[in-house]
Image 1 (cartoon, helix red, strand yellow):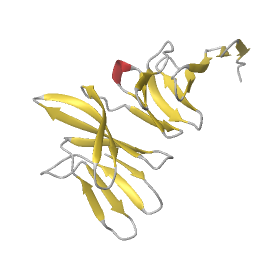
Image 2: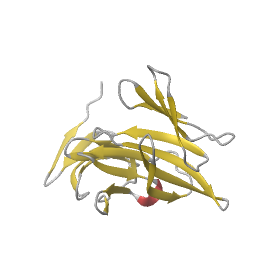
Image 3: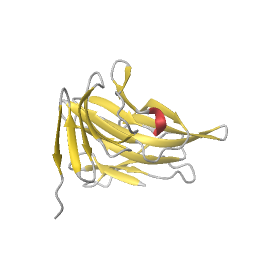
Length: 182
């Protein structure tokens, strides 16, 4: 379903679980060695390798006929559950900034996972895609805005909006400009 490069030699595969297979499989591309990560799930949906070296993955679980989406921290020998979302969210977004994890899942908004969970300040739209930078998170929302968020507090540092004929960028003050036709 998904694959990511962890380093120059290793790949993490996310896959559907068939006949008791594991949803996640580490593969060494040089030696061919495979290491399955045992986790009780229907599928491994996606994975993310942070700049810190941490590996995160998303699994789809079924418990008592109810589906849930789970975010995990993975190593070659274990998995730790970090976040659960009731229902299926295949568009969940994960990012890391300065070693800190953030997740945008469903209608919950985006959450920073450090010593405690901290929600991002909300813009007009729901978070759709997160990107981690060294000192902040970038968030693309459902209204087409781009927001810069502090990677510790979740506060909005700046907000960019693009309209048909103009754009605005605001932090402590707002600047704007026109968009000219070609």
